[in-house]
Every structure is written in C-alpha cells, then in structure tokens.
Length: 575
Image: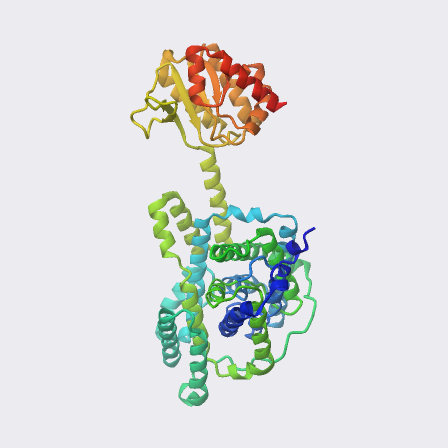
C-alpha cells in the first residue's frame, strides 16, 4: 500500500520549504479573514448560534488538509449546505434550541459516515449521475433561495423562512412595506460596498471591511440605530470533545437530508477541485480520496460540535489566487479561527445581522449561473431544458425534492440518449477506400445492392429494438436490390446478451432473404462476446473485416486470400 495515497499530506509536507510557506501564509491569513465573518453568517442561515460557524471552520479544515487530495480547496461552512441543514433540522426542532444543535451535529456525523463509506468502497461514480446542467440548475436555484431567505435580516422584517420560493416571495410581497429603515439602509450600503470592492479587486477582504464598519457604527452610534438587530454575545473558547446524541428515529428522518448533503457536498468539492487542478501540474484530484477526506472532516468535526461542512467556491478561489499551494494555508486559517474563538469573539457583539445578510446575498447571488444557461441554450437544447426543469423544481418543491428531480431527469435523459443513438448509412468517398455518413457528405457513392450501416453506441437491451427498427428501415429502402449488409461496428464498445440475440435474429432473417451480413471494425472485447455467444454458428468467421472497404471488396471480388489470413488472426486472438 502506498501510504501517500492514504495520507496525501505526505506528498507535500516532506519537501515543504520557505518559498511555499510565504504563499501559504498570505493565503491562509486572507482566507481566515473572510472565513470568520462568513462562518458567523452561515451559522445563522443554518439556524444555529454564530459560534457554531466558527466550530465548523476548525477540525474539518485540519482533517481535509491531512486527507484531501487537493491542496487548495478550502473546507468549512458554506451557504448552500447551511440552508439544507436548516431545511431538514427545522422540521424536527426549534431553530437555535439545544435539541436543534444536537440534531445538526448528528447530521454531520451521518453525512461524514456515508461519505467515508462511499470513498472506502470506491463508489464516487454514483454521484456522476448528476450531470452538469442539473448541478447548474440546482446550485442556481439554491443560491436564489438562500439570498431571498436573507431578506428578513437585510430589511429587518420577520419574513417566513422556507426552501420553497413561492412562500418566501408571497410573504415578502405582503410585508415589504414594514421594512426597518435603519436596518435596510445599513444592509443596502453594505451590499454596495461589497460589490464595489469586488469589482476593484477580488483579493480585497470586502466582507471584513463591512463587518468592521458595521461594528463601529453600532458601537459608537448605537443610540441612533437601537432598532437594528445585532449578533450580541458569542461565547469564547474552543469546542470540547463530545459524542453526538444518537436517536434512531431522528437518524431515519434525517437520512434524505443527509444523502442530499452527501451529493451536494461531494459535487461542490469535485467541481472546485477540478477547476483548481487545471491551473497547476503539481497534484491530481482523486475522487474517492475526496470522499474519504470529506467523510473524516465531518465525522471528526461532529465530535467537536461542527455541523455539516464542505468546500467553498469563493474561499477556494481566493486561496489559490492569494498564493496558497499546500494544505498549510488551511492550517494557518485554523490558527486564525482559534485566536478569534479564544480572544476576539467579544468584538463581534455589535455586528449588525443586516451586514451578515449583505455578505451572504452578494456571495450566493454570484452563484446564479446565467452564462451557463445561455451557453446551453445555444449548444444543447435538451441540456438547457434539463437545467431549467431542475432549477424550477428546486425553487418550487424545495431543495430535497429538487435534487431528486434532478437525479431522476438525468437518468431519464441518459436512458433516452442511449436507447436512441445516432444511426446512419455510409457511402464510399470517390477515389478512396473511406466510407462516410451520406447525410454529411453529399458526394459519397451509395450502391443499391449494398447497405453500410453504422450504429453509434453500445448495443444492449435498452436500444436493441431501436437497432432492429433502424436497420430494417434502411434495408427496406434498398428494396429487392439489397444483397449485402455491412455493420460498421467501430462505435460499438459493448454488447450484452440481448444485443447478441438481436444480431443473430437479424442475420438469420436476412439470410432467408438471400442477403449477406458482414461485420467491419469490431473491437476485440465485443468480438469475444459475439464469439462466446455462438454467432459463428450462423455466420462465417470470414465475414469479419477490419474495414468497411475490405468487406465490400470481398463481396465484389471474392478476395479470399487476404480475408482468410485476417480470419485466422482474429481466431487466434480470440483463443
């Protein structure tokens, strides 16, 4: 066993040097500065006391730095997972209560355990059933839901909180005139300041700037803004080790939310990790190792009062842009969070909640991917409608059902595409040995007595009837002149028992009509499956060819010498 595969930290730590540390130090401090106000804000989204957002930024980061295959992904509390936590846990307990906190921590343990098991058994491929359009639609919808749910803090109105947008919009419409004047002004000014600084330079810690300004305003001018809600007391000190409270009934009820968090968290981490991987050549992302790292981050994190955590789009990008090249940057961020928990939490007493809402709203609205939607509309209409369906269903039915709809639609589209692949007749390019699609090359020669048929997919139970239907349609168009069918099998990479039976049945059918059936370009593994299934009992081994032109030439000239040599070769290869 390669110990570096199990502990990726050993890939970079033994060769760590001063040059790497300089970049990691700047990146770690920068990410830490952003992480602290974000952690407080995201804990509020999750319905938890602010300090739990800082707890979530401690142990999970350490575990990921040790076990994660990416050296630049930033782990911790994120807006999307926080809202999913609030959606699931709020049905079981009152937000902010002791039982609510205990359930959120139990949820982290469940999520981590599932992720760890998936990683150990190399089951990361399961999540690949969520296509990119589905991810785009889902994340855009969740970003919109998160942003709208923060309007209650931005405007100082107790709007209803829900992951179903119609209820949030209805309540905003009915109560928007009751907005708190001071709260709204501070919140909107914070939004404008953040946007301005982001446009000037994304490296500017805009979140920290508005946090400091908000605290100073409330501390020194609080009498003029006594109707603005503030964070107030945040306990000091580090989280103590404690086992989560187990309840089988709660585990059963939390399982759908846990599975949603597993999928969303893994997809976020892989997509962020892959984008960062493309910008360097020092390491490669290993999907199953990422699952193990996320699993351990959440499992061990839950033992120190962390709720479910995953990778952050914004913090990971800032980490890379600021010069972070190893997991040391994450450890430096952890040190900053520890110092905050030990000494600096009293400074956040006067922090306005509307400032936190502004930070969240600007961050999450940036995740609404208009560019991808525009691209899909131009490039692939089916993928666009898949994205839109996921987006609308997540908005209307909620996060949990939105991801179920997304997975379901992905599977339906997958089945549709594999059951109805592209098929075409090929014709000979003049003065050459090449055969090409007659629908794309007008000059190709089509012969009345020969059908060259190309099937661009694996041949299996889901598309075998379609194969037969299309083959018969093209054969019928040739009429009584047809004497030879050549199946160009270069695009067929697998065939199952149903596919073999269809082939055998069609060969027999056309043999009765005195039509010969040849194969061209059959891949070795596919040919092995055909031979094992007894196809040589109804067709001669001489009817397998390397190229279409060889099959047609054999039919026309009977050049048996070359073909018998090839047949002997493939027969030996099969043995």
